[in-house]
Length: 272
Image (cartoon, rainbow, N blue to C red):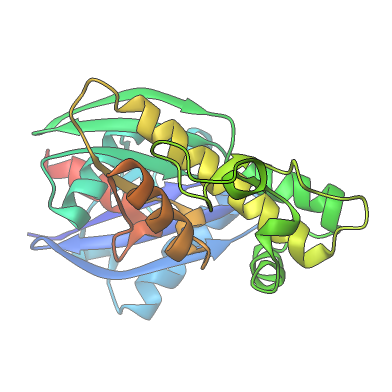
């Protein structure tokens, strides 16, 4: 059996993985000014870096918003389109090995997909995600370089931005510890530092996404949330989501190839 290639085509970023005998081959991410350039650049580099001949590729599966711009064979190889939410579910299940979960795809915005023993369906989403972080950072920090924003945030103090339960109550409230967030950005002052603002923006986006995911699971009995997409690479995920886990008694799981789950799912959808 040949290699199934899964390609998640964004507007300016393309992610590509190969799948052979159920195993992932060297995920790759490429940035470009448009989806077509990004796709061809990623595919060519992927084949070259991994010494894969075109004859070794059995199928090319495309997904993502940018895949709508691709309606011709790629390097002479026929392509098929994989439904993005299906790809999210398949990729997250492959990486997490869970049979029941909600997949939280943190891209420009955030989509929520329920996976229940092989049944996959889109249950909603919110217009807050990486695009929100980039846009507000351009306005408030004069940069949309995510690495720079995350680096600034490492030096920030969230107490200078968010109002905490401990700021408004002399003792913990039922189910709410003193360090729980009472109101995002409510404590921000006009002279707040760039570091504090950066941390506040990241916390706002991640907490909002986490809260939306939890609310989407009400009455389902699901307590596992598999986080995928570019925002999972933010170092702040490592302590913001664990805080929410303890507060709400759920699990937020960031798999090894979280950034590439949708591309993995696209490749898997070929066999499905």
